[in-house]
Length: 407
Image 1: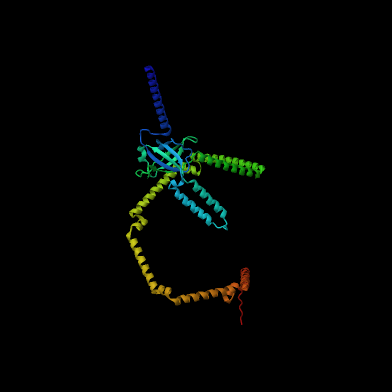
Image 2 (image 1 turned 90 degrees about the vertical axis):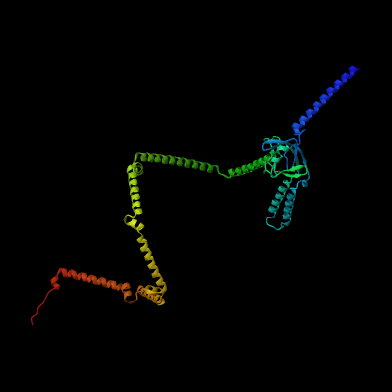
């Protein structure tokens, strides 16, 4: 009987040992998988998101690249649980009112309706109804501020999801809601969004491919071939011209280095540098003489009497202008006397009339300028005088004979 009791006691000890080991193993598994802290307190953080992208309880929580906690629970709650959804609902109601206000006869009604419906769909996608509860180390709670943001990231494209908390402004603790600290969340692009975007890109490539096929069908292959031939020929011609240009440039540089040609002489001839240096020295000497008041230009620049004479001349000119303004003197009377202006105007009018009559051939001057008979008579008289002078030179006795008569 005592032997049987000892066996049962040993079995009981073994059972207790195995049970304790199983409990410790379960606790270790829960700690590693779910992040449960058995002997330490944790700060509770709450966030609301539109989509968690497969986030599971026990996922790590990172802050500035360091793991500071675990996800405690992920659940779907009514949209009214998040205060920020009230603004989204108000905007949806506003868009619905805009839809009701659209007139049936509006020319672009269908396009406007489609745009407003897209806005409603986008607003509904921004409603946050997924509640995520986090347990983080209280040591890092002071690092999290009111403007910190929570986002869901993933390790690679198909890796496990985790929570990432961004640092915020130091000194402004997050809003508290009961036992939880509420942190705003931002929606990051997950694997599904990336694949959706990739599908859109592939679809766009498909549309472009179909359009390119249509363009290829419409293009004449013979014209394309001739066009490519022309392009190749133009390219070869351009290359030949470029080679010829480089050859000429190389020969020109060689001539310049040898001092040949005008540019080469300018570059290689030291006389140009010497003459330029000499000219600069002369110019510096001239500028120094002018600055010292030597020579005509120097005296004009430095002699104060020139300024005084110019000032006196300007003063006298100003006095003359004042007298003219007052109507004094001959110029003043001429500039201010209306009779002189009227007389001048009448004289100019008469002169214009006289020139007009002359142009029309009226009067003596007009006939002299316009009558062709005067030109012919003068031409005939000139011819007769020329003939007379010719006869006189030929036989002067004929015209210079002196006759004496005795009565």
